[in-house]
Length: 266
Image 1 (spheres, helix red, strand yellow):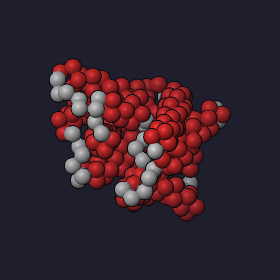
Image 2 (tube, one colour):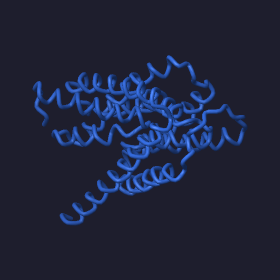
Image 3 (cartoon, helix red, strand yellow):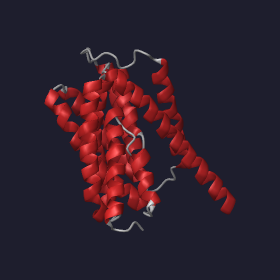
């Protein structure tokens, strides 16, 4: 178990600061660094996941400050993310308690790698942010996709914010910067907040580590969002591609390790 000393707290702070800074730039992926770090320090997976989820809400809070100052959110789109995704999060959280997730983790890994290569091959992807006419077809397709991604958010632990980012770009023609802003705030605060609450009810949250993780998440989220606004969508797209590739590869390696380990000792 991770010792409660100054050095350990400092290490956790800088890990949280770095992972959430990168996540605020790309629209997801904080769990790629923060969750394995908590596992490395000795927490069991349920405790590490619950503790990470609580801290990840602070990422959305910190990142919301620079973006809200720009006052560029469209109410209907924010509402759509919430009413479409939250039921999926609840269903995913329930499903995760009764079904194994190795297959889904592998599928998510492949899909996340696909996102990276797709973005690389689409040079103009996310370069515009023009208001478009929202018809019933876009609402229905967008809602179905957000519900499914919300399900993955509740069911699995990493990478789903990246899917929300790319989905908003493709369906609603947002820029990378604008899509990341919606993802960080409405997924980071509300979707992850629900996940944190459901996991918190199991009693797995290690509260003694929460303050330092929240501080790192708040600062990392704020400065990451601020930096993404300054650098613009082209830079955010580049970071997105790196993070989505890393998350996808990490998920596949984790599934491969579990498969080999279980097969070896079964």
